[in-house]
Image (cartoon, rainbow, N blue to C red; front, side):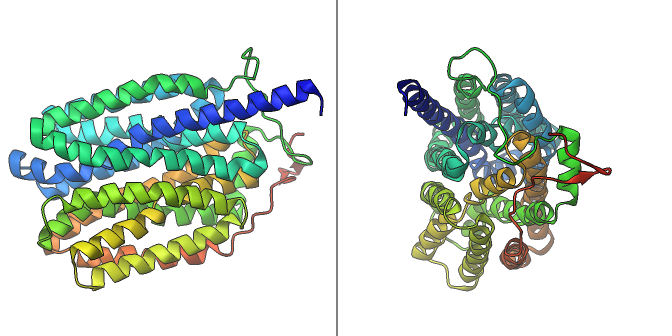
Length: 422
């Protein structure tokens, strides 16, 4: 190996490491903040007289808006780079939190925590961050790199949930929401490090297709993906992930309160989910580089469904809550590097932001329903029983979808009678 090749490889490795760290920090801020929203349901309900279903709808709406905005945010990052997208998202995110902090009506809360936060998080989360990581990482290390970035992002949930609980008690709901807004703004400059520049820093990096593969235009790849059975199954299965996670993150603190668990145990459980998610996401990324990613996904969903059912059916105690949080953390966001890695394996990284964004829309539709239906069912029945049952059953459904996925890379497809452009 020549000296110039060695120098280039070292520079590329350093660049990859820098992007992983920057991406993890941005994800920590964005994902950590949104995981705190369940802590505000009680204060908004008791102090501001808002129905639980309305607050749950606002939280659910940000998931739905995030999903619909994600393909556009990913496409913008694919074309213009990450820095402007992350910067715009951080400002929008912080504006939504500021509006929620002073909201005295359901309309203001829905616009702030629903619409603005949803747009903001679409620009500061997986579709933009993992696409930047996926472009710079080699194919054989891509799953691991995405897993590392996602695992680092889990640090935010572990740190920000207890921080928010403390600041809420010390300075109230408005002050704690403004603190969270300041954190996402502080993370925004890291987006500059994600921009697609070559090692010399003199222009965009050319994304080269794998040997024997073809380069698709955006129109072509969307047409191919819309007919690809594996991509459709992956997208449908991702719905379950969003449904399960949003319900638990939004309603677990309130459910534990109804079960007469100690005050603050809900915040502790969410923090533990974030802590163990760091290990679980890294492990899933590591496994995805060694075992077929769809197989890992299938087992992950199956384990998650069994654990949810067991937690709901068995007697509640502090120990059972801690064990549930730990196991859920191990399976929490490991789906993200596996799903995005599988999309990259099927279609390459040229349009990864757009394709993962479309897949992620399904996840966020599930998130909307998980968060909103939890509040709706509770207001309707006074119990979470039916929604817990649906959340557990969804795990089996998703597992059955993922095991049959064919992960053969798309090299040639006949589009309108012609192969994709070389």
